[in-house]
Image (tube, rainbow, N blue to C red):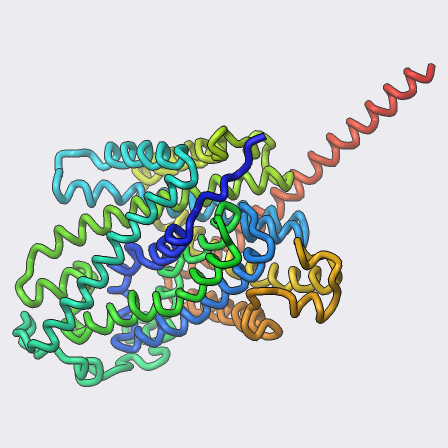
Length: 491
């Protein structure tokens, strides 16, 4: 029988990890966080980045010892319970379906920048077919495509940072008339923390560093893809730790350095979201070709997100089917080791979701994406909870591979890639996420996500109970039939 191929090389994993931190959330979404916190948004990215690093470290602790497709869904089933695996896996799958839906819905706007006559739905359909075909070619091809998608995004950000530094060092004149300088962080419109930690405005809205954290955390979605790839990585014991530990400098370079340079060149109070901050930095010194270049970069970023999403979802369905938490046909692999049924099923559901976006855009973006945003928090919380159960099972002698049979401190000490401060870290990260959820309730645009998240969890619990009862009823019927057959044989 064919199996998943361990074909992802170190360079693939490193660039997948790099690319996962860079998307339209950085290129366009950073405007909102800057408006909320001013220059102190740099602290928000550092704080949020530290939380994400610990979440991925917790996932990587398990991935290094037990590299399997489906990552945290498999780990939740193996070390916690079948119910936990069901909730974790289907939540992640649906989360990426919604993210893919929105990415494909907006791809048309990037294509129309050059070809306004092409309908948005045509662009969505073409890219969906192309990405689906790419995923059916095999995991090594997926890794190669993601490698080059990531290269484009990385080069774009580095070029912006270098270009911005050149403007600052050469003291080139800017459109605003304010000289480019890092001193602008502290001297423009209220200084470094113009809205403090949390400020209630006269218009009833909240701003400040803490509110910016809400936006910042959403921009880190996708970093957990490192764990999903572990089951198809050539040498996970070496590759996964390298990719995970690089998250810190990725955040420093691609978020803190990039936005720090932008706010040194472009006064932060002029970044209003009407265009990308990355376009504004070049527009401010008269380089107007930046909008077209960034449009191309964002187009590749959208393709990258959908490519990664379809890959992750097909592996998640494969893992769920192997656990008995999804239909058995999703566990089949083709001769290339690709869960073809998982790829095609995820793509088909995404088609339906994209149709919904085009027919009822306001409903889709206001309600369905609310579930996607809170689903990311559910994923991250499940990772931390699962890590605690993983350690309990390892200590009890039920660890994977070389840890099997070892007990107590000996077993825990033998874990190769340990989560820093594992005794308290899961509780701190979960408390941090609860704080973010509370802060979301302060904003009308995010409050609905919290309500949707609670409803979504109830739906998942009910779905598991229904599935479990149906499976038990079938098992009872099979046992009864077996007994009847045995009885007739004896007669």
